[in-house]
Picture 1: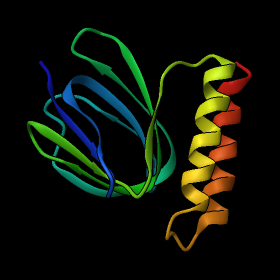
Picture 2: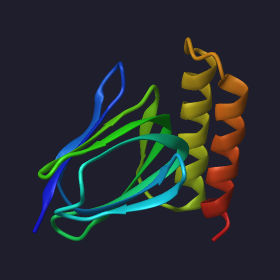
Picture 3: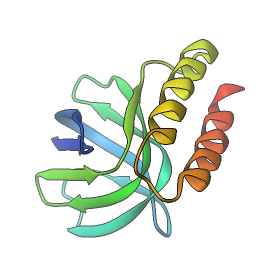
Length: 129
């Protein structure tokens, strides 16, 4: 069974499609979301979310925090900044990091330092795997 994932920021829809499962950092820790998950509304932490599309392909998106809404057939993620990470090789991660740092520094966010620190921590977790 599958369901719809919708990831949006004020500038664009980062992802809209059918997925099998999601892993994301909620306000109280990591959440695993599968089809039929109980309805939930939660704040999310800045970090990297992971999900499998209907073809079992893994996707990664950096989120600057935001709000997660889980409904029976759709999960919505509203965030200030979101960016796909095309692959988990070191060069791709470093390129994405530069783009994100620039977007964060040029944004209207009030907690830029905290978001930039979290970005570095999250990317370092996967950069050297």
